[in-house]
Image 1 (cartoon, rainbow, N blue to C red):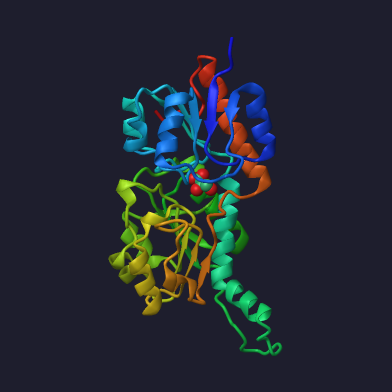
Image 2 (image 1 turned 45 degrees about the vertical axis):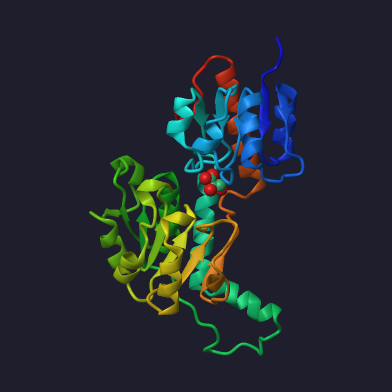
Length: 323
Ligand code: DGY
């Protein structure tokens, strides 16, 4: 029997690409150039499975390709707001993602951003590299302590809980959260986490607000001018979730007016473009969407896609089936 044909839209870790080429008739993207809409449509017309990632737009236009040959989308990444799930379902496609394997890695990066922005690490590094440092002094570049402060989580899924664990046990932070689908009591045991009835309650009480809700229509611009106005003066915003949860223009205004003290950002509204004013602000840490970027995690994400497509092509339900 011939092997199913799969098309991988971007470069994946070598170890995973090797497995894919052994098991499947695989077309890799060795140049790692993002595919155009027409190329994506061709992929859906010619492959049995397309393996996109979070930077591809798998929208209704792409999924409208005819005649559709593909039967499966094995997405590399946990977030799936880049895929129109309704259009995929209507086209008869099964879709999977890669949860769990990037939880710790992404939580580590949220904590990295929180510490960097609170302790002025980005600013300090620029200062040192620019040879501006004139020596130790008691008032030089004083930051903010995170210890025993209140961390407010928007969304309380796996990654948020991993952030809360680090913050509560590492820094004695008080944890408050809002999630329209609250976690089970056993999932937050030991965190002493208090559930708030609205995002606003979180904004009003948190010293650090960290975003962990999915992107997409429901959360688009959830953090806008009203949210910034509700935040404590001196609060910091951390975003490792999705850029469009935050109204980037409103965030720039809140940072410029001093309404909030700083922001630690890994994701942006129009990636890979970052709003120009953010790049000039010392109290903003900007990382290029590195949440899951460790070798261990990226290999695990790829292997999780392999597990999902293996299941699909052997007639089983993929472990991470979304539709
Ligand atoms: C995801 O998997 O959704 C992340 O954003 C990639 O790190």
